[in-house]
Image 1 (tube, one colour):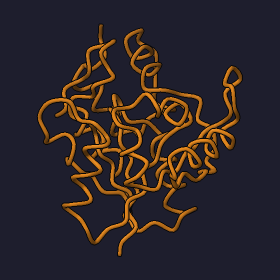
Image 2 (image 1 turned 180 degrees about the horizontal axis):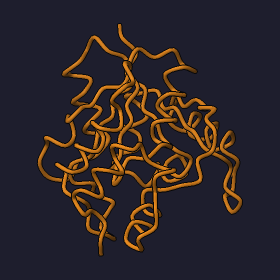
Image 3 (image 1 turned 120 degrees about the vertical axis):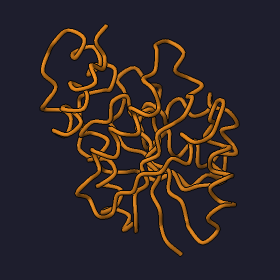
Length: 202
């Protein structure tokens, strides 16, 4: 049974933090592969215009080239309508019964997960690997939040000990719109793609 890590997200754009998180999960939990899975229509991203799925998928493919254990997956992107994690995991498990899935998330998602669509179904279907740091204004530390969710949902959530990357896709979009250079934060082929296609020029 192959151990597959799932890196889901909008990837608008994908950046070095995403790659580092995938690599850490691969190494720390001895996974066989990490599947980078861009979302199709993310139900929670109503506050800004999301870049086309074609462009986001292209950037992911460029970013993961050179990592033999990274794979691109259009499992979510190919579906129509809103794509919810609970449903994606259900379909993954029925499509690939021979695999064991690990879902990789950041601290922000860990603290927000109870607001997700059917969080109990998400936690029942996968082992969650949570990375990030304690939030200053959060009620609990990450370890306390993990313990709380594990107890409440009989979940299997584990800590992912990744370095902190102080960058977000939102800040990269803003930097690009203001003409600032983002080469430190994204792989060179992704930077070239953004420039060539004039992305994030508001």
